[in-house]
Length: 321
Image (cartoon, rainbow, N blue to C red):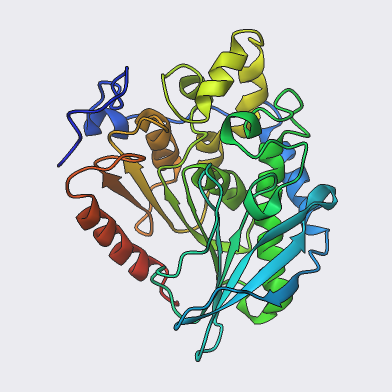
């Protein structure tokens, strides 16, 4: 292990916890109406025709054909992103890829998948999906309509994932049952919320996911998006009750498809106890795995080697079945 021992933070990004303690964390119980809330959202979302529009991108790559894409999500919002298609192979499966709270400026060309249509979406309010008055920055975005559970922007971002799946099915209907999801940090939290309620998603890969165990998320020091919500909580003490409906760890207990979750022992932006609350919540199965990283949101010795090992795990995990 190469857990960082020196860092610039005023708090300990391990929060004093070792791997055994982190693996013992249990997810919080669901609040009343949790499942009904998300099932209703899902039914509303998939009733929408995403109407994807594709145009040739200015980006070029030797392995992938790159297209710019826009599709319609809930509330009439137009969601932008990129679609990667194999140059000389058929499309046999699909993949929706989220992003962190920094947004996304370009797609990733090195995901270890083949014969796959990859949709890199930009969640509402950010990057290609900028939509004033939704703030484009993480501290503002995470607070937008936080006091209105039905309208909270994070719920809309989950809708964007579901409509991303709808978009791939509209374009390539023969890949039904072979659509996966990948998301890191912010995108990891969205995936944990989206996957359990969408039977069209057949597997998921979450990296250092946020939004797990909201009580801890609101109490542990951080430089991530939780920091602005912790400040907000000082004058709005009821915010936890609103956020219990948006607990990624609670949602993850309902996941019934194969999952590869990477969680870190040290992370100043997403507290490891919150990450492991999500990872541990996924029901135990031979098809599920927790991949332990020494650190997240921070450079560390051995990072390249661990990332390579995780990439090879992902290659096997996303293989065609």
